[in-house]
Amino acid sequence: MTDAPIAVPRARPRMPSLTAELLPALIFIAFALVPVLAATGAETYLLSLFTRVMIFAIAAMSLDVLVGYGALISFGHAAFVGLGAYAVGILSSHGINEALIALPVALAAAALFAWLTGAICLRTSGVYFIMITLAFGQMAFFTASSLAPYGGDDGLTIHVRNAVAGFAVFASNRAFYYVVLACLLGCYLVCRALVVSRFGRVLRGARENPIRLAAIGFDVYRFRLVAYAISGALGGLAGFLLANATEFVSPAYMSWPRSGELIIMILLGGIGRLHGAIIGAAAFILLEEWLSGVTEHWKMIFGPFLVAVVLFARGGLIGVWNEIAARLKA
Amino acid sequence: MSAPVLRVENLHKRFGALTVTDDVTLDVAGGELHALIGPNGAGKTTLINQISGLLAPDAGRILFDGQDVAALPVHARAALGLARSFQITSILPDFSALENVALAVQARTGSSFRFFGRADAEAGLNARAAAALAEVGLTARAGVPAGHLSHGEKRALELAIALAMEPKLLLLDEPMAGAGREETERLVALLARLKGRFPMVLVEHDMTAVFALADRISVLIYGRILASGTPDAVRSDPAVVAAYLGDEME
Image (cartoon, rainbow over all chains, first blue to last red; front, side, top):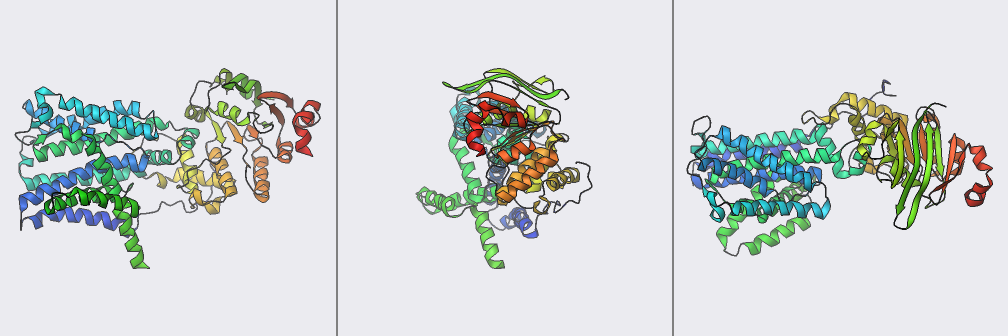
C-alpha cells in the first residue's frame, strides 16, 4: 500500500499568497522607519513608545503560539515576561550587566518555570487550565513582591542597561530600538516556522481534536509541554528587553492584569495569525497612550472599544483588514 | 489459525452499579475479521474503548501482539499498531483530507519534535497519505477541508487515517454509522478488500454486512459474551436468536 507510485493530488503546500505576505512586510517596514521619522520630532518619546510596542508584541506573539495554535488559553503569561525582567534586574544588582549572561539566564528561567508549571497545568483543560495558569502567575507575582533584597513591592532599579560582549550597545536608544526590532523579526520568523513544522502540525491537530491525535499515536501532553516551554522562553525574551528598556523591574510586570492585556492584544489583532499579535499590541498601546492624553477617564472609552472589537470584528483587526481587501477586490 | 493478535481475558468494567463489561474473553487471530454484535447498550463501544485505551478496565488483561497493554495510554497503544475508528466521526475538520492522513503517517515516520521545515511539504508523508486516500476512494477530495466532506466521505476518511497507521489491528466502531445506502455499499466493499490484510474487530449493526464479512462473530448482551463462533453457528444458536437476532433479522 505504502510504496504504490500514486500521483499526489493537490499535495503541494499552499504557498502563502502575496497579499497574505504584504501585511507582515508592511508592519516590519513601518517599524524600521519609525526612528527615521522620530528624528524629526520627539525622538526619545517616540523611540521609547515604539520600543514598548515591539516588546509587548513579542510577548503577545509568544502567547499566540499557545492560544491561537494550541487552544491553550494561558492566563499567566505575564509571569514569564516578569521572570525574564527579574533575571536582568537581579543579575544587575549583583553587578552582572552582560547581556550574553543575562539573556540566556532570562530565557532559561522563563522556560524552566514554564516547564515546571506547565507539567501541572497541562494535565487540566478548559476553564481549569485558565484558572491554574492564573494561579501560577499570581504565585510568581506574590513571590516577586516579597523579594525584599530585590526591592519587594517597590521593584528594582537597573542602573545601567546590559552591555553586549562589553560594548554598551543598548545605551543608545536608537541602537536599542533596532535590537528590539531584530528580536521581534527573529521571534516572528521562528514562530512562523514552528507552526507549520511537524511539531506545529501536531500542536494544531491537538487544538482541533486531541482524542484523534492520541488515537493515531501522539502523546499530546508532551507536545503541549514543549510548546509551553518555548512560549515561556519567548516571553522571557520580552522580559529581558522590557527590563533593559525601562531600566526598572517591578512585580507589576507579572500581575494578572498584564496577562489579561496580552490576551486582549491577540484578540484585538486577530488570534492565531502571529502578525495579529503585533497589530494588537500596537493598537492596544498606542490607543492607550493617545486616549490617556485626551482624557483622564480614558478607560471609559477604551473598555467599550475593546468590547466592540471582540463583538463585531471577528478575527480582530486583521479580520477587518481582510474584509476590506475582499470588498475592494470584488 | 495463527497466534492471536489480540487477546482480551476476563475483562470487567462497572459504571457505578451498572456492569458494562462482564467477564469478557475474546481473541482475534491474524488476518481474522471478528465482528462484535449486540443490542444498543450491550457495551460494545465500552469494550472497544477499553481495548484502545480510552477507558481503563476494572480487572482483566488485554494482550496485544503478545504484550499486556491494559495499563498503557491510548497513544502508546496506537504506536504499537492498534488503530481505531470512532462511532462518532473523529477527524480534524480544519485540516484537508490529505493532511488528516498525512498526520497519521507522520506519527509512524520519524520524530515529530522537528521545529523547522514545512510538514505539509514533506513528499514522503504526502505520498503515503495519498495512497491511503486512494485506497478508500477519496483521491479527488484530497485538498478539501475534512469538515466539508459528506458524511460518508468522513467515514471513509476515518478508515484512511487508520490504514495510514499501518496497523497490526483495526478496531472499527460502527464504520458505516449514519452513512446512506450507497455509501454503506462502498464501505462494505472496502472492508471486504481490506479483509485478510489486517486483522479487524468490527462493531456493526448492519447484520447483512456483518454476516457477509465476518470470520467469527461474538454476541454481546448486557456486557456478557452470549455466544461466539462462525456466522453459521451464531445464526443458528437458539440463545442468540431468542435474545437478539430474532427481532434484528426479520
